[in-house]
Length: 373
Image 1 (cartoon, rainbow, N blue to C red):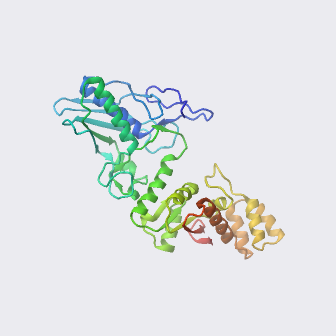
Image 2: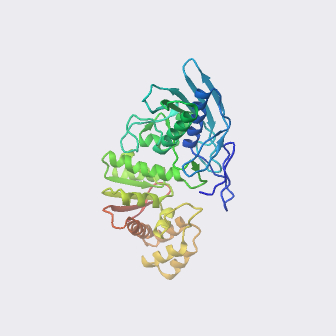
Image 3: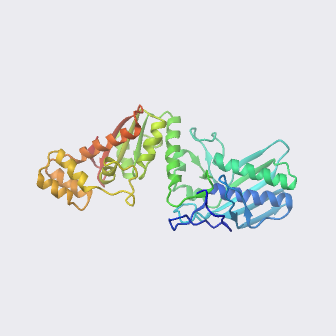
C-alpha cells in the first residue's frame, strides 16, 4: 500500500490489480476533522478540503460536511463523511465530527467521547477503563496534526478533542463493541488510515481484542465460533459466559495464531460441519469465496472410517458436505468425528506447541453436535 497515489476530496484510491477502491479509517476521518477545526479556531477559516498525512506518508484530502465556529465557547467543530471505499464497512457514510476547544497551557491533547463514540468499561483493551474508545494510533495521528497546526498558527497545542459519530450508538450494536465492554457507541480505529477492501482487518482486530478482554477477565476456556448457532451450542455444552465467546466467523487462523501468542488453558472451536471440514483439510480462512469443501478429502476420511468403495465414491460425488455427512451417518461411518479430529490436528499444528488444550465441535444447521474431536 505504500505506493498508493494521493487521493483528493476524501475519495479512496484504486487498489492495484484488484479494481477495488480503498477507503479511509474512522481514525483518519477524525484526524481530518480535528485538523480543520483547530485550524479554524486559530486561523479563523476552515480549510476545505483539509489535507492530512497518514502514518505511511500518503496525503489524502477530505471535504468538510460540517463547519461550526463558536467564538462564545472558544470551540470549533468540523465533520467528515467516512468513505470506506469498496469495503463492506458498517461505518461507511457515517458523519465523523471533531470539536476542538483550547485548554490551559500544559494540558496537552485531551480526548473525550462525544455522542456515538464508546467508552471503555472493561480491562484488556489498549486503553484504560473510563477512556473514550479512540485507539492509540488515531490518538497519535490527532496529536501530531494538532502540533502541526499549533506550530503554523502560533497555538499552544493544548486542546480538548471531542470525537462524535452520528448514529454511532445504533451502528455499534452490529459490532463487537458491546461484547468487548465498549459502551455508548463505536470505536475510532485505524493503524494506517487506509481501509483495504475485504481485508476484514477490523474483524480480525476484534477477535484479538476479544481474547485480550477474556484473559483480563480471568477466562481460561474460550470458544471460537463461526456464528450465533455455534455460540448457542458451546453455551449449552460448557456454560461459557458471553465474554469467553469469540465471534470467529471465517477466521479460524486469526483465532489460533493470536491464542498461540496469548495462550489460555482451553480453546473450543465450534462451527458447521462443512466449514470445519475446510479447517480439517488445512484451510485457515473458511470463507466460501476463498476455500471450498473438498469432497475428495471427505471421501478419503470416510474410507479411513470404514466406508466401503461404493460409499467412498458416493461421498466424493456428493453435492454438499452435509449430504456426505448424512450418507456416512446412515452407514454408521463417523465422518463428523473424523472431521473434528482432523480439524483439531490442524489447530494444534498452528498452535505450535502452545500450552492450549483444544477440542472441536462440528454441528448441523440446527446446532446439534454431529462430530467431536
